[in-house]
Image (cartoon, rainbow, N blue to C red; front, side, top):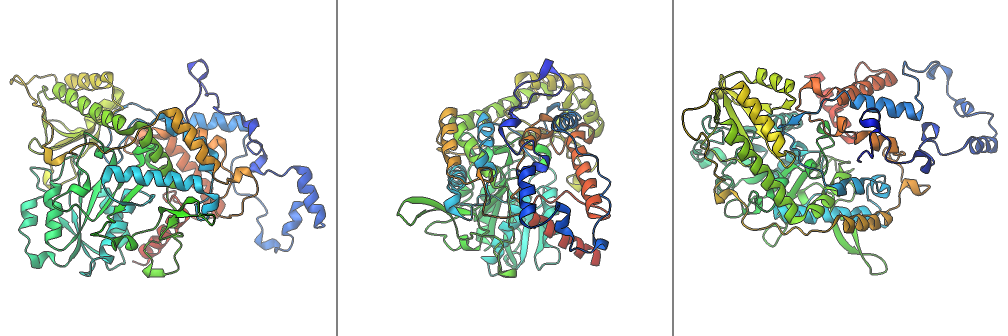
Length: 624
């Protein structure tokens, strides 16, 4: 949510809501019952005070003193502290994208985020109580289908790496060849690291397809030279459309290679780049497209938020030629149905609960996800529409071209992979060490980008800097970037023009619009308000579904989470500039450690099921 105003341009911002309008907001511990009501309940069961509720528990099992935690704060004190923590973050003109792209957040996100029946409701297992959420997920599915061409889009997983693993699991289920997977070496190492963790102690094995050091892309000649005997043991081939150097892989060749060798194909994509004027959709890779897609879609909805929550995109084909794969995928698809009165409605289909009892035969063991981000992403795509999405991509490309025209005149700065096409990212090769340049950039109020010098062993000794451009960059930001490079690399090249801008070849690009519909902000705001009214929310009264998620969601938390020092912090920015979110995570970690009495606590899991998985992996690691 946007902060309404800042007093005197500095200090703690005003809240963008009135706490007194929300009865539970200022109650101690958010407990809605009054003292009189609590007294009445105790009287009715014959107890003198709340402490007697626990009189049956042996005293040796009860803490005599509370853990060493700070004293509770008054409401205004909590507001001031959270704002002060957010101010520890230093936001600068940033050209970091890489693992987590950052694009402009449409105002509709703020409007929809204020609709508490959508933000506070439970997972829509009971469709009669959740039609609003189900419709928003249907919208998300339809919008992502328009961008990707895929008929079946899951309504969200944890993040890109989780979606990649689910796609791999689906490929294995649908291909009798076994459990060997061929991974592109041009995938992000961080995603491969997660996949390695998830497959450890399972039958799944990975082999890595090599990268050509000079092109920065997959070495297709090495792939193509693999005999059929060498590839017939692989169930699937996993490759990116945009690789770890921001370069465009030859997805037509890669998709056809997988199909010709009998492997299922999994493409890692960025949905933002598939809009009109962007990259070709995965249904058009090669002669028949790919079988599964995975990617990160967080940036369709919200700013980086220091890396979370993510929005894992997953999809599979569902048409006359391919109908069986869908039943091997993780659940959370929304479909149309009829209620008992014959009226149109929406329900979760195929897998209404992910807490499967089928053990190892389950299609997914994920029992939570980032569903509200899917709601926001769908609304954002409708608000931007075909025209807005295309304009965002055009602005990103314009800023990239202008920056390179100014930067590549500098002696000591070259394109690292001049023969390989890219879209909105670029890797520069410098004649000086990147780490030091990034530090100087901080002093000039710039987050220059990401040091990718170590991403390929064959690049040892090369100084490689990756920059990402988006619609967040105005002309002034680009001019600031150019001035910085001109100061750090003052020599001019002898040739008249150091950079010849040319777009990627048509084989890499979308041919025609994505046909996203478009609506005004007022239309969408009103429509989503109507959808919110179709939900039953904990704010409305007694709520019949119990869960670890069914707590009161404080308005204060929503306000604090939207402060720029938290919401706009990028996880790959220097640690010195991300002290706000790091301080929050550290305090939570230490409080949980004291409450539980454990030696250490990790804040890595974003939900109970993911925490259980982390625990299992820790047990495995201990026994190794």
